[in-house]
Image (tube, rainbow, N blue to C red; front, side):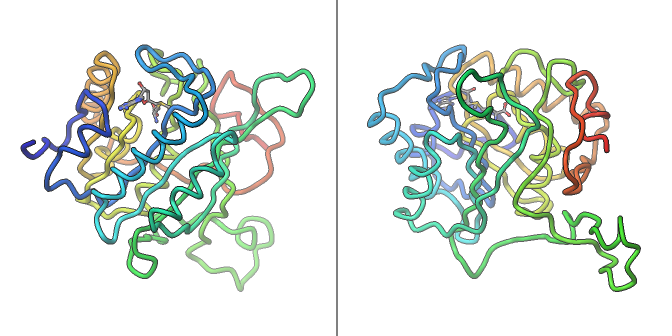
Length: 277
Ligand SMILES: C[S@@+](CC[C@H](N)C(=O)[O-])C[C@H]1O[C@@H](n2cnc3c(N)ncnc32)[C@H](O)[C@@H]1O
């Protein structure tokens, strides 16, 4: 297959497109696959039997690994159900785990006889454990020493965030919400990953584009993007979303709204009040 066009969301099966593509070497891959929990997607059926899903997970992770640049980073979002399988598959592929991040999105659905779930796992892997991009200056947050204690010993640059990330999920009332995809990643979360693990001008790839949050954040932050999406409608609407974000003049996404302080009150009616202290 000829070189795939950059800065485009391609419609098709990511494993097929990645396996057939030549010369594609993304610096950063972010993958948010279907979690196999019966979610409703327009085309994909999110109810595979266990062996089938695990086998498919290995196929797409392997296809991503093969194209990832030698100094590249690979982030994968996954639910509790298959987090262990993803971690083990990464190890067999030769990836090194830098962090096992917990995204605490605020609150989950009501449950009857177990505790509610309010997190998703995000694995941060690298191909070469000694050579990879990590732009700490781009993602530092104010430290408790700076914010609470006015401590003169505080590093004026702030600190690197911990591995528990608190961003609200994209609720129905948020301006950011596209309305045509149910699993939309927040742009602030994507911005933290992209700023930390890629330089301006780098290539960011997303094999499961969905609402195109990865591509929007990458394009706005001055990276190239390429993404795959099996559903024709999602692919087209995602491409439109990227172009609209760029033409709106958006050129920065502040990833550091959360600062590691505990959640006290949460409401889904207004993003500004979500993490109010
Ligand atoms: C969890 S969603 C991704 C959400 C995305 N991160 C966002 O912020 O909107 C997974 C997406 O992968 C797509 N998909 C499933 N299997 C695929 C495949 N083999 N190739 C490409 N896309 C696929 C689904 O249609 C769905 O839109």
